[in-house]
Image (tube, rainbow, N blue to C red; front, side, top):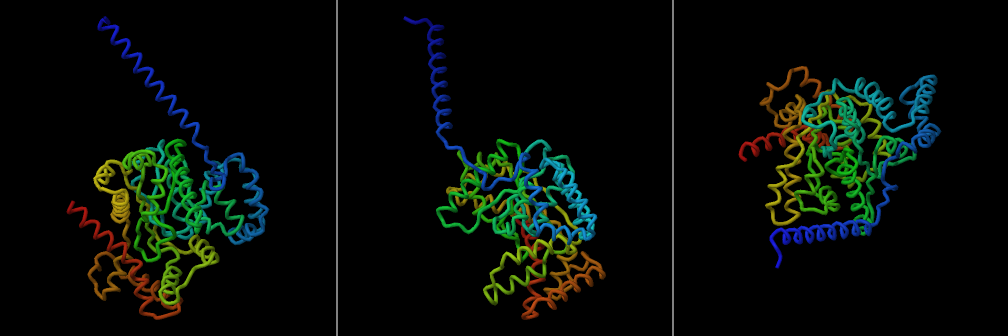
Length: 417
């Protein structure tokens, strides 16, 4: 016959043994999981910086880029010397790229950069920034500029392999913490690549305390109608070994709303849209390269980035949906609403609506001078894009009107919740 204390000791011992067996089995399972090799997609690390900076400096096309940016031969040599003395990714970004973004992009081509919402983020935590996508380079470059200014570490940036047009671009972006997203693969290879990408992003955020930036969709928004692709969220869920809510909560998704007063590459975007509608136009790598250049140097007016709050408690509501597809749809809709609500509207958005509707309903949102300047932009678009002038006019105006319509609709929906 066992006394009470002896029974407790036996139960404790059995519980301890069971726990040990579970831990052993879990560890064994972990050991059986093959280690994923991310070398084909990851950014360069510090040990590779010297090698790839040297390759970048020696690249003939990169030499042309330096000549285009700096003009004077002595300045070009000074920049090369400065680059050759950089030995870590952090130094490259904080000592070289930060100044480049400020002095060669923001000061000459914008009328000022502002942001809001960063005060709600923890400097010591990692986040998954999902934003609308308006410019190939600037969206992520300005994001990192802003968070570095606030004392946070830079985010790793997703870039499609279709944009790695030359070796110098691959060197430059991988030195700046960009990882590669493989596009246009056969179905089986695409699934495999998506799983690897998903694992890489989740590992960055949950294990390496490294933030990540993703555009909400493949390619830039051309018509001003920002929309999160559910395929993006499905990709992120491929690495989720927990329930839907746990898996997405640990990613610490921060909706980021990016707003340019003057749409980057606005005329070429409308040109592309018009050709797609009339000719079935497919853009080329040269088109992407041209957009990168124009996006950097063309006027953008004022620029504002709004950082939303990390999505957490709201995810619990999405689990009420019966299927994973419906849950992901709800999450995508929520991200979109945050982007719309936080989008900084400019006088140009209101002017475009009045011009499109042939009214003056929004006249209290802009001045006569602002109206005239936007009309000059519109006339320039109509003059430079070959085709039906009225269709091109409507497309250009709609590009500016859609953010306003989405904002209004989201305000109404938020008020009715």
